[in-house]
Amino acid sequence: MFTLTPCLGFITRFERFRWRRSVERERQLRRGRIEISQTIHDTTAQTAYLFGLGIHKARKLAGESDDELAATLDATLTLTKSAMWEMRGPIDAGHIVEGRELGRVLWSHCATFKRIAGVPAELSLSGLEPPMSTDTRNRLFSVAHNALTNAFLHARPTRVDVRLSFEAESVSLSVSDDGVGLPDDYAQRGRGFIGMKADAEHVDGKLIVESLRGCNGTTVTCVVPYSTHSGGC
Image (cartoon, rainbow, N blue to C red; front, side, top):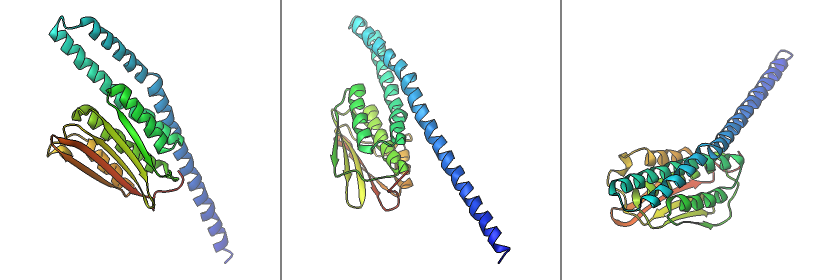
């Protein structure tokens, strides 16, 4: 008995030490992600924005006098906008890590999408957002960002609707566009849908994709139960 008591005390202190180390590592990772988010916003994103302004002005000056020049400038401007939008992913994900609510971050993200892509993107909310872990909020945000990216780069939509519904036992996120729909082999093209499916499964969620080629666009829905991923950080 006298031998067992010091051993139990040592194990307890060791486990407490491991827990503190784990918490500190998590804090460092979060600080790092926030710093990266702020750095991208303050440097690369600002530079891309200025590039976009310059190309847009050059396009206006070029007019229609040179078809090849106009086409080159249009293509370059599209690439610049694409880069600007891709950078919004880690920038706005940093706000998730800071602790902001998912609905608030998505509202800002949709407004930015409208400014960059020139396509209306409206967010509708249903229910009150409950406490959710940072990982759950981040995975749902990632699904939304990737779905918006696919709409921007491939769907040629005139409108995108994002819906975030907080229900009794789960949270449901859907992104719908009125674009050209998806090809039959969409799941094998690129990493977008692979990443969205992985994000959903990581938090015990389910990804549903509904699309008819050339008819009524595409809807991507992610449903995540609260049961195992609610609560704190």
